[in-house]
Amino acid sequence: MSTEVVAVSAVSAAQQPSPSTPTQQNAVEKVNLLGMSRPQMEQFFEDMGEKKFRAGQVMKWIHQFFVTDFAEMTNISGKLREKLEKIAEIKAPEVVHKNYSKDGTRKWVFRVGDGDGSLVETVLIPAEHRSGLRRTLCISSQVGCALDCSFCSTGKQGFQRDLDQSEIIGQLWVANYSYMEDVPVADRERSVTNVVMMGMGEPLLNYDAVLNSMRIMLDDFAYGMSKRRVTLSTSGVVPKIDQMVKDIDVALAISLHAPNDELRNELVPINKKYPLEQLIAACQRYIAKDGNESSRKHVTIEYVMLDGVNDHPEHAQQMIKLLKNLPSKINLIPFNPFPHAPYGRSSRNRIISFQKTLSDAGFVCTIRQTRGDDIDAACGQLVGQVADRTRRAEQWKKKIAQSNEIMRSQG
Ligand code: SAH
Ligand code: SF4
Image (cartoon, rainbow, N blue to C red; front, side, top):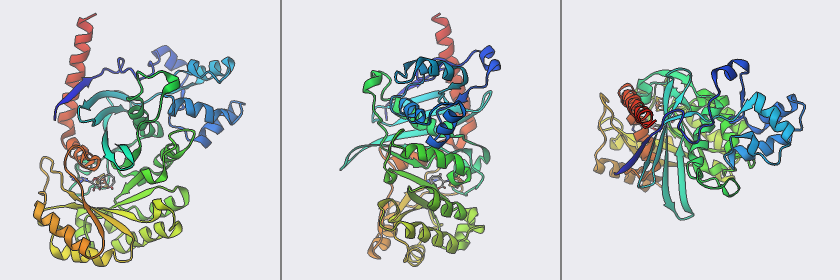
């Protein structure tokens, strides 16, 4: 696949608001408005002695017109803009590397945290769909992951830290803005149509930040996305699935990967805490509440196909029994290998016969494409690619240093 690789330095990233000087930083720790949900921003304005409706106005500027400079917010009085400039900022996470492929795929590497920080990836894949062009963004919620699934490279790195709200929603902001950089502010539009919380990390273990970020995705004053087009994927944090029922209405995907407890304990260790019976019951409760609403008509079951491990005909039979009372769509994912992975990918024939067994039993069962033009494949690859993150981090650092060097030598 031919790609156009662009290395950007921290300072030259066009979409980054200019970093404050050290003196400014010392003077006031500014509040970042990028990651605030509407109730949070309303509170912020009330605390300033301003009217709540300012929140909606500012959110529109940020998330629909991609404006980071208060001076451009023309429906806000000059006096309030000045006040905002003193205490607040709109700051996306720093893009240290971006890669726009000719096939339309876009990837970004963000640096989060202080100093050298940690690196997080986000990928966007466009695909023609009967409803028009879809642009799906695969968003990360944590740096690393504590859950240590045996087939997952993110898990192998252990947990480093949670992303905050501005770092999570910032991934969506940067992706949308990337299509609008050269468009006059008044003509800007939101380009990303779908979000899957399937990047690095377990979203339900960073619950509040993920919840508020998803609220911003659904908010008409921000991205206004349909609840069917925002999907949260979890390895099965049961109490938080129940909490989601109370808090938000989005699509749910479950990383099942094994149809019995013995095998699932090995592949997805959180199963020891919340075994299959509890997980399936939580999925049933998720559906029961709003059975008629399309985002909760079914759950998506993700099942990574590991050669000789979970791909036997008897596993398909166990799946049929396990899921018989759960409205679900099954997505078989060919394993995406990474260095030192203890598994191989099931053969094409094996995957197809697994699919046939499930389809014959009446399930909607698809096989995830492994080509680069499929968003889910890209998510798998994203997870795979960070396997050797230390090595990749070194490569990025070299590229960034090189581009800085070129800029310096050009004066
Ligand atoms: N922690 C959440 C979301 C991130 S993982 C979860 O586990 O659901 C996103 C998806 O990628 C999950 O379905 C996960 O099982 C899958 N995945 C992880 N490693 C993979 C690999 N090496 N090959 C294919 N899919 C993988
Ligand atoms: Fe964490 Fe999901 Fe990877 Fe498991 S599959 S280690 S839960 S990111």
